[in-house]
Length: 523
Image 1 (cartoon, rainbow, N blue to C red):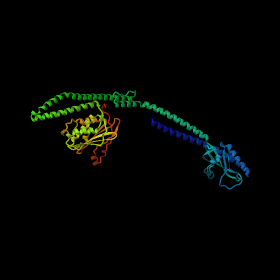
Image 2 (image 1 turned 90 degrees about the vertical axis):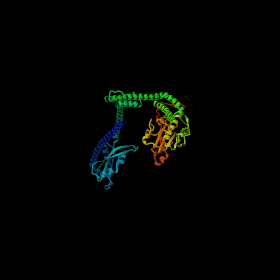
Image 3 (image 1 turned 180 degrees about the horizontal axis):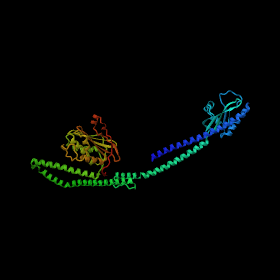
Image 4 (image 1 turned 120 degrees about the horizontal axis):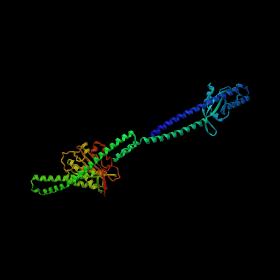
């Protein structure tokens, strides 16, 4: 509609300017031709009187000049007459002085017009002028100049006749107003017509857009209506068939997902009973280890260790099933993340061959989080650093700013390549399946850690390089109202960034991830 309005307005403007210009030129040309004819007639009548006169003295010549003015006024449609002797002639004392009927005409005569009359041989000359009255009002007009030959050696006189064009200006103003009113009415009519046409023409498109928008928003029962339009109804039929197929596939996937979640949950629960029985039998065997052969004692120890791992795996499977089902309960409380990190490190330090250092640069102010889940995230990160740290030291850094608190776990172990970094949070994925597990992980730790971070609106990032080590960073926003925040800790370690000048060494702005689960907060 905007483009149509602009194009229409441009066409109307160009057409109006052309019509107005044509009418103006035609009116002006007609009025000029009439003025030239009128002036020629008056000039001939005045020259006839001069030729018939025998005036020779000053008095008779002055009377003759006055008679010439009256003749011009009587034989022409103008009352503005200006008569003066041409310059450059031999002085003649008896020649009548200049005379005029209106001062506006004297002021309007330009030197150019007087020079053309005196030098050229044409019988008439004209010039467009503006007459300015004593009240200051300006009126367009035309001055027509010609020559008269006086008798008795008085010489040649210039005759200027002025014609007002106020009537022509009024006509032109009327035409201009009429064109403006017509153009405004035409624009309004075209605007209304275009609006009606767009409402009619684009109604199918709006219907299709509404249906697709509803379908994208999750309303799988949204359909496009039939509008009795041959082509649109074909599109509507195809769109509705696609929506039906998509709805059926979504239902199948939902059913499969629900079955999978129920299966994992049911299997995890059902395995609790035989696991408890096996646990009791294992404890009985462990109590009788002293009378067993060395091979049997080793078998009992392996059985106990695998039962512990199996129990942890069942717990992780139950936790994953809760996340998949979308039911997670957060029991938030004001938590000092520095103290929480120290507790986790103190518990895992005996399992690490290297020193685990906690460097708290900030983060002492309490943050409302689920302490159990954040503790589990930190435990997973430190445990992975112990697994892959090659016995070297591990650095746990904590810092904060006005919007977030961050915890990073840095190791100088084997590291990972880019492909491994992309899959490190996948379930049951291991960077090197042949490596021996020190802490007996289940392969679900980092997947659960990312879910624990996401349910808090936090981000869990990783940087790694083969042979250099890895750095995992957890950034927790201070409040639910914070949508974007700057991590106070860099993702790329300072020592690596200083060596290769990596621009990603800074924290960078992070966007709060969308909630993937339904939450309940209890304080």
